[in-house]
Amino acid sequence: MAKKKTGSPKGAAPEAPPRVVVLAAGVGSRMRSSLPKVLHRVAGRTLIEAVLDAVAGLTPSQTVVVLGPRREHIEAVLEGRGVTVVVQDPPRGTGDAVSRALPALAGGDGPIVVVAGDTPLLTPATLRALVARRAERRLDAVLLSFRPPEPGDFGRVVRDRRGRVARIVEAAHAGARERRLGEVNAGAYCFDFAALSRALSALAPNRGSGELYLTDAIAALAKGRGGVDAVVAEDWREAWGVNTRRDLAAAEEIERRRGVERALDAGVTLVDASTVRIGPHVTLAPDVIVHPFVSLEGTTSLAEETEILPFSRVADSRIGRACRIGPHTDVEGARIGARARVGPFARIRPETVLADDVRVGNFVETKKAVLGAGVKANHLAYLGDAEIGAGANIGAGVITCNYDGEKKHKTVIGEGAFVGSDSQLVAPVTVGPGAYVGSGTTVTKNVPAGALAISRTPQKVVEGWAAKRKARKQT
Image (cartoon, rainbow, N blue to C red; front, side):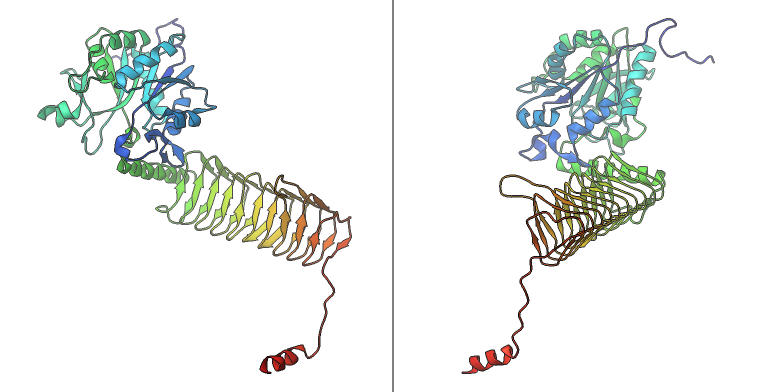
């Protein structure tokens, strides 16, 4: 049998980039939460952020998000993403939502991709497959379907005798034979714009709810000349939609497992894979070692041979080669150089930069601090708004006093300087290269290079004082 040709007709111009509609107007009452459903989080991202990340893989010419009640908080999350917001209030079904979005999309000529805002496990590859299938076969519509172990309340995909998609029937309205069907609707579609417009204009309100359902448009298009097809998701978990807290927990576990699988495939050692969490934007190099109960979040990268010990969290940070992040350490928004040692029980706050071979030990906190190569701050220190030169030593209990009650000020410590234990540096202040600050000193003036600063009062010793005090108490 000759192989069927696919792709654009010979000489035809390539199809324009798709336009996307994200449906996020639902109230989400089954979540039993005052928070809009799409603002609940999976793997550190809100549901709608996860969907928009997947959509971005299509490089769409335009993205429209349909919002309903309580939209103010969702709009705040959408700021900076370049999306157009359309309001559907009150919600009147998915068909009505897409109808409201179409006028905002009328300026382009690419296909229309429709996705639900509560499907955080969708991948760009699957959405690209929908777009490619519609273009190859010049169909009116392509939907995403999947085959879960238990179809439950999902809408069934009904095919005709020739295996073509005929309609989608909701589980509540399905007959006994239809309920036995294993292929179900994932709620993601790719439409020809003109065909979608025609089908939506012909939709009738559902008798029971009065709403307009997008699934009815599939049935109408399936009867037309353009036809409808389905792409079956290779991994059924990808089509998981979140409607309840149980769904949310299941999606979290699926995303957690995805992160584990990516790490293992990249050559990472996971000491206990069942307890680690690795976000979707985390990049791990070969020979990284991750211990139990570690959370890697946000846009984070770990270079080769780095080791993260138990109960630590790293978020939105870049960690260099052969670093060791000790137990119970929190790292956020930081850059850490090669061979650095951090923790245990350290807190590395945003805008911290640790150069190569830095040592930051137990109960040390940094914030907006730059530590040069080989700096040591091994115990019980706070280093905020500070610049510390290479090779400097920061003793136990040192504090950079950066806040005067109104503004933050900077402390500069030069290369090779030594700051003794229990010292306070009241910013703005500079300690020059090679200078010494004696233990217990409060520095309020600049210390020149190579100088010694000390503010302790002279020690006084009173011989026999303890015996005299005891005698006074007895009398």
